Image (cartoon, rainbow, N blue to C red; front, top):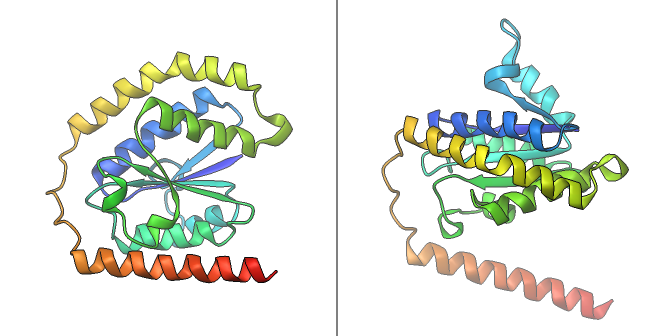
Amino acid sequence: MKVFLSWSGARSREVASLLSDWLCCVIQATRPWISSRDLDRGSLWFGEISDQLKETSVGIICLTNENKTRPWILFEAGALAKGLSTSRVCTFLIDLETKDIEDPLAQFNHTFPTRESMLGLVRTLNSTLGTSGLDVRVLEQVFDTYWPQFEKGLASALARTEPSAPSKPRPQVDVMAEILENTRLLASRIRRLERN
């Protein structure tokens, strides 16, 4: 199963690289693809990335305070989401909280660098494998074995990279407008469901 790791910026790249190695240990059937390693030298990078995005089952977008609004991250998120009925797109919030994320990235399920959240991500990846996935008990044992390695690697990656300056809190007007828009959208969906 191909897992596309999206990154932008030094901190995001370091964490994506860590995830690539770690996921191969926890679920050996995964084939992580990360442009910083897997893009052939001399290839047309845009075409290669587009081809990889088409063949992906799961995408993990490594988000930082620095890259959360960068056009490339948004492009890859959109390309991954194009096959949402069959693909899974997860955001990995490295130095962010849920409240820091705006649409369209706010629509995805967020993963945090905590044991419980990462176990949920690994379970999602494993379930995508269907009958080829690991038994849940085995998966949890393997996860427990490699979790300390991930924690250590993440701490090292964060120490090697400078965090970007904290972003300004979103204006209350923007937050309220988003809440209103989402509430209206939900109300509309509920009315349609009730009619059917």
